Image (cartoon, rainbow, N blue to C red; front, side):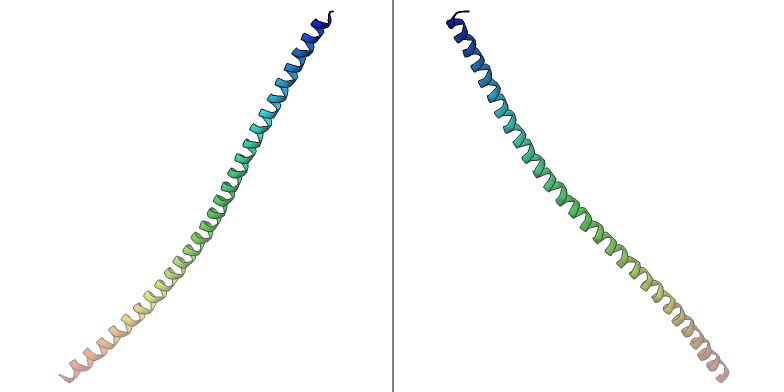
Length: 102
């Protein structure tokens, strides 16, 4: 093989190696950009997870407050029933007294 043929082959090999190097660099850049995007998405997911957790705590606190309110309402209704019964007895006594005086 002549030296000109060898030089052409070496030149082609250099071109191929250069193209492979450029492809590796481009691939590395793409992977780095993808990694940055994955990192950003991870941060967003973590933040959303924290928000969901906080909302869960708020819902729990709200349910607890509603339950406490319902229990207080039941107590108030019981007391109101007792007061109504007492007033009815008092009214019956007053009516009984006024009928006996007439």
